[in-house]
Length: 265
Image 1 (cartoon, helix red, strand yellow):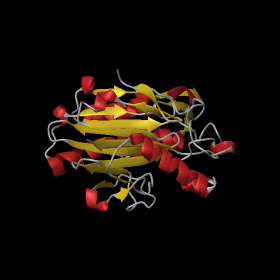
Image 2 (cartoon, rainbow, N blue to C red; image 1 turned 135 degrees about the vertical axis):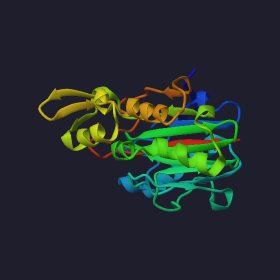
Image 3 (spheres, helix red, strand yellow; image 1 turned 30 degrees about the vertical axis):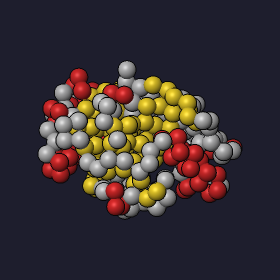
Image 4 (cartoon, rainbow, N blue to C red; image 1 turned 90 degrees about the vertical axis):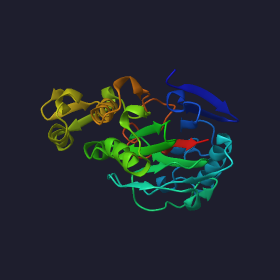
């Protein structure tokens, strides 16, 4: 089972047993169960979206309460780059971390009860678990992060920091905009071709200078190319274009934010 949908109070969430392996918890929120209204209905977790701050803060409280974890959390200001930071419990905040530590797009740790959080509204969450060294990584991979290989770079940083071996690791590609609804132009397509040997395989031409882009599939390819066995990389194939999620592309930019979370128990 790659994923399961669960209900915690009023919230509907997804959990990912394939990267839990009995030592971690991983998941992704839906938009269901919060207090926001209008375009942000209802579990919007992003403060920079135009939603009422008090609604977002209440949603964050509800979300962290639903995790049933006694530890702390940490997050970063995501900038569509490839910076990866190692984090510790001392850097964490009780509950949902309202202030980002720094600008980055991936977090790694080997400390228990420290919840790694990234925010999404179409970009791909990449989860990496090393059950041998008991370490995890969580990356935010939009098209810019993907062509900068943030997934495989997160894996390599785990090798450096924790001695992780790719063949021991498991990875998940979480909910993101799906292939059929992600239309791109040459500005995006060309870096894909230039960066990845088989990049063209993830582009389907639909018109002059227009392509459908398999963002989730390309992140799988990136991780497998870095040494994680194909049978240990799982693509959720959940699409944020569906109504139970927020989607920047579907909603014309006026929408909420979803959270990916990952922590060692």
